[in-house]
Amino acid sequence: MKTYQKIILTILLAAVASYLFGCMNYPVYTAADTLHENRPTVASLNLAYRDANRDFFYGGLPESKTKVALLDLTPQGWMGNTTQFTDGTWQIDIDIKSHPLEKEAEMTLIHEMCHQDSRISGADQGLDGHSGAFEACMVHVAERGGFKGLW
Ligand SMILES: [Zn+2]
Image (tube, rainbow, N blue to C red):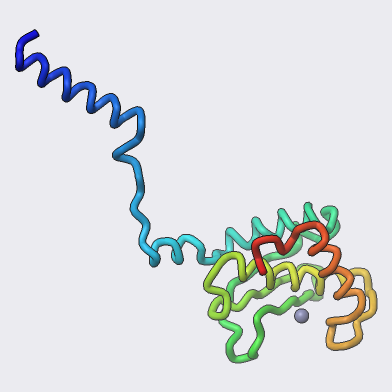
């Protein structure tokens, strides 16, 4: 084998090895990229609502009538809020400023879903909504791993 053939063969083998082992495909993340990727979005929170409804509420919450919104709730001093409108639809608001990470927003979302559950069942609405029924809901979710990785 001639020298130029060895050089070409070496280059070809390097290209094949690079392709097979993905040497050129390793992404380089910065801390800012990671934070951006983990920011909550309206779409991600609506998907999280659907999943939590299935996993922890047996699909019992009115998913088709509920929208999750990301808003600035700083003026009210709230992290989240749940509203039922007179037409039977619901809106769960999550404060965008106090939840820079998706997981944090999901924890507040589940908190609000327990408020929604308590209101629908009409169970024990005392104590500013954080009633015995609300506490039982949160414990139910926690026992099923709903807050795993969130706290
Ligand atoms: Zn609450």
